[in-house]
Image (tube, rainbow, N blue to C red; front, side):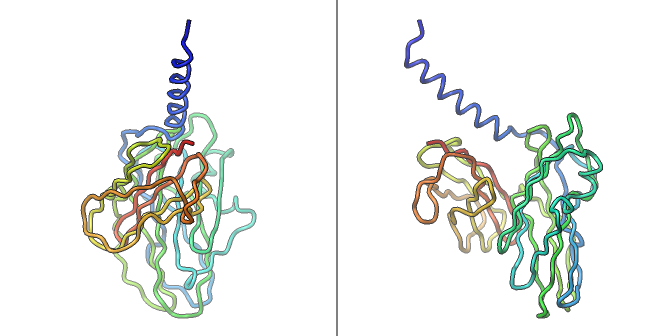
Length: 275
């Protein structure tokens, strides 16, 4: 005879295990190098131009990715392609005609998910995985587009680390860019506990001093909480998140992405909120 208490324990364990399986487990890998290309270019004020998300060299196998591109709306205006499937990169489409593609644009960011659904198909790179079109402002200036919250997957498992390279655009001005990649994993975000039901401790490891920001986004890419923002020294620090949004309202149970952003590095992790 099984006691009711044991049934409750078993159900709770199965629930947590299911969420952890949805999050995936780390995979040992060389990593993936991804860049916004061209990494530096000069465009004519008022002109329209295209940027590519490019896996720049062979590396770990992947069959899908999440990425967020952040830009300054005072300098650039995103110009969507219609249908949005035209934004998918040739490298992804040539490998598999069946994909899960989700795209969302906000005032200053673009949220991308693209996954190959053909069984057994994975890619090593290099190749174009996405393309984006922008219109430059009429005001001469230099602006930057940044890759944050980048995560590659292979068969549902995380592929780490991600090496990211941002892009600098000179609108009517010459740019001088160091094209070298930055190791996104050099900054780390870890949660204890995860999954959690009340609050969780966010451990941030930052490699360099500077302006930093920690934000929480829902699975649709919408920002729900600005956890911390300011100028911080390098090292490790702890930040508490109580599962609430910026207005103090409890968020619904689900999976959220916590992202660390700075001038020199980005990193993110997924958090499973239970209710």
